[in-house]
Image (cartoon, rainbow, N blue to C red):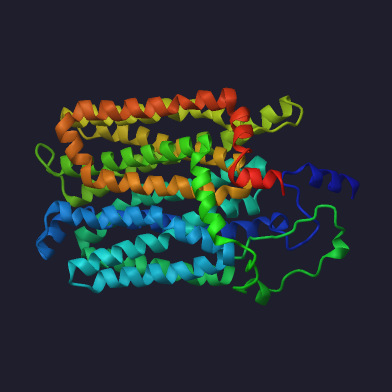
Length: 477
């Protein structure tokens, strides 16, 4: 018993002796809750690309210009980011389980609406609504990971979430291509509705509330009640917090974006995601024109190259950052710093931007498709690994406010993504394809170099942020 107690006290965060403490759940209980969020995230990102390959069909059906049809994707991505401003405060008030069970039916209804409407304005409204509803997955992930998993394993666990996002990003176009090629774009909307409906059933039965208040690591096991029954796990009001100040949550957003590590992570993720969107849109336009003249199915299949890159990113951007963090902690006599995770950053920071450059130059010179495919795989590797490394870093830095910190990240990603969808192609036409991609890579490398500043002065930067905002409030609580 003594060795078990010693091991428990060595964990961070330290779990209580309560069986209902999420840190004490079995692996199956943790993963079934967490994987539901990851599956929802996959649907969310796949949902953003459902209209891209159907652009020409939508232009003809609704008699709209390509720019106007682009609004369907643009405002869906924007809603996917901005929706965090609604879902995170609601999550803090009523818990994670209720908002997941609320958001999924809204997502279903929005896609059913998209599949049935014959009005472009209604199609646009339903697209925005589906983006807004799908934000609930991203809004909860930071808090859920810190609720369920210990600090020494968070890199690998957050990689599951980011791999889910990448699967949606790269396999979403493939799903869309098959539905358009062999059926109709409306069937794609119906498919998302069916998948989300099935996921809601799983969430209703297996998604447990992870919010746990007043953890007392010194209280004996006899001070806690019995394990929660199955009926108790289905409750929607178990973690309602009537003391939560929603205005303070909104103010925390403002403060968190001014924290240097949060600002850097937000810009880094937004840029990587935005540049990936440019690569996707450019590949669709280039491969559908001379000299390639490929059909819609090929455009979807081409995205598999990015998916391969994201698979290769799993060990580098996930398990490796846990290994490095744990080894540096041991060598520093048990002192753990969030910056230890950034040492793995150099690998995707080199490969990812070079992939964008390789894609841009080979597509500009009309090289065989395999060459830009290799560049796209490298870019997909960088997107997945970089995103997970910097997000894990900021979650470790501000554990208690991980959801608010990631709100800033996802909102900025949504804004940049929306702008890129509307104006990215015009930018490349004006600057020239090679010059445009060169500028993109220059911006990425400039942002990547800031990792050096956080490696050298990260602890001092964190000490500075303790003087104001939510971190100051924690210091005095």
